[in-house]
Length: 143
Figure 1 (cartoon, rainbow, N blue to C red):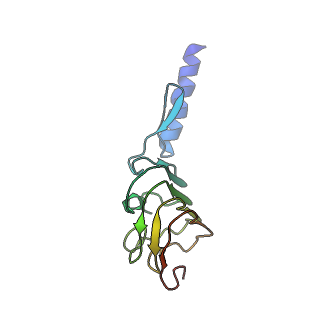
Figure 2: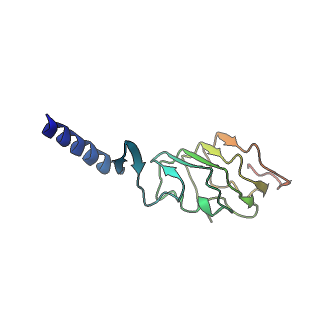
Figure 3: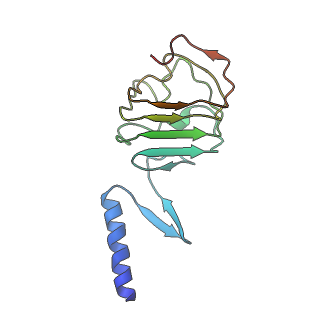
């Protein structure tokens, strides 16, 4: 019986690795390792979640490349101090996330953004920006 349990665990881990996920159980907790995931974040094929990361600036978004996360649907970054993100694409120069439908950057210390900040998000449907300290919004930021 014990041998059968080990085989099923190995098969499960093998299936997860084939699908691009590597999950290891340590002291009863799942820990996901993904070389493309920004530090202090949890990542899957469809979602990146960085809560209470306490990072400054917008560099946390740079590793979230569409080449690395082509099916990315949801990004949550909260508990940071992003500051002024005007005059730049949040995810990097000419980056387009074609499948991203939800962007939650609430509680992120954002003070300014403009028409360049959220370029490259053609499928965006839900946008959470609450509890920031916004002082300046550029002309037509969501075109």
